[in-house]
Image 1: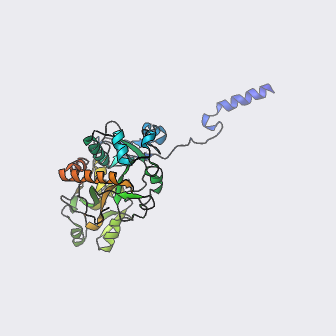
Image 2: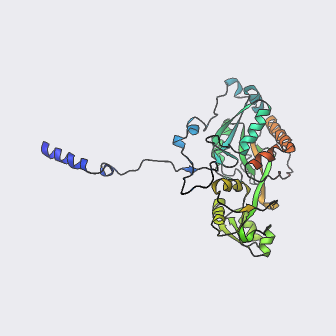
Image 3: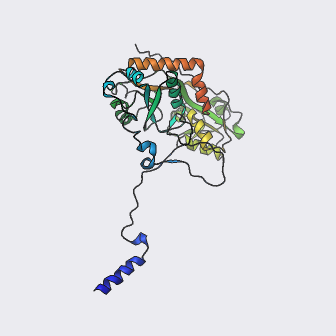
Amino acid sequence: MYLKLATLALLLLSFPCSMSIAEEEAFELEPVFIYGKNRGPKMGYTPPPIHDPLNDPLYLSGYKDFRPSGVPIELRDVDAMTRIKKLGRITACADAWFWPFSRTARDNEADGLEIEILDTIAKKYDWDYEIMWINMKTRFGPGAPGGAYDRSINKGGCDIVLGLAISGDDHHMAPNELVFSQPFMSTGFVMVTQGVAKNIKTLEDAKANNVKVGVPAYSPMADYAEANGVPYTTFFQNYRVIDAMVKGQINAAMIWSGAISQAKLDRPQALFEMVKGYQPVAEMTWNSAWVIKQKEVDLEKFINESFADMLKTGEIKRIVERYGMPFYPPKKINEDRE
């Protein structure tokens, strides 16, 4: 009996480890790719940086579901401006992977243009700022991130939310008792060209010369091209339109203005350029703004005045253009809050 058991043990040991007990793979979260510093083209393939929540020190340090720093009991129920002034600190919720507007930066890389705008405002009053990282789930306005609001600004996790566009679909604002600040810039679809399409300057030029324009599928730009008889072809999301340009499959495209900055970092080999001085079609532009609790009237006024001053001095324009993104002034809006 003992001999048989010993023989069986030796046989088991002789098999590879992968055949021992079970062949189950360890559970891993799906990685999220983020844009990093442009280090120039390299020979061979270099994997992009990966955000792994289970091993990300920023994520594990508490930048989720509650403020990075605590708030004294006596300041928890006061209005936001009183709390900010007493603490000398303003807290914002921002998407951790929304380049060029915000990201969890690594190795002294840039934090994003909206983080820099917040930093500029804070420094003028000798305040600090902190970021509570959240996933906004969408890029054209906050129509989807109801859960993000519930887990951040609605529970007092931050004073403001960054990274939003006023898209016209604002059904989520009233139920969450939120308002938009005045806009600080606008974004939109811009034209990029290369090669034989270099002389194309507008969508009308593309239409007149029957030049097919690449656009993101299921986007407002695709709908616009269809409605206005512009020859076009679709690719899923902006980055695939950019890839099609890099591969020479198309020579003209309409991409979101923020994707210009992404392309400069992620596709340094790209030859295409944005049409100089291009002005987006009015229907294809959206104002960028921050979100504030409706009751925080003083904070809303403070943010609006800060944006107005920075627009007047050109500070916002300088910050945006440093990120390789075209700056467009905010479109005028008719609604003013009393």
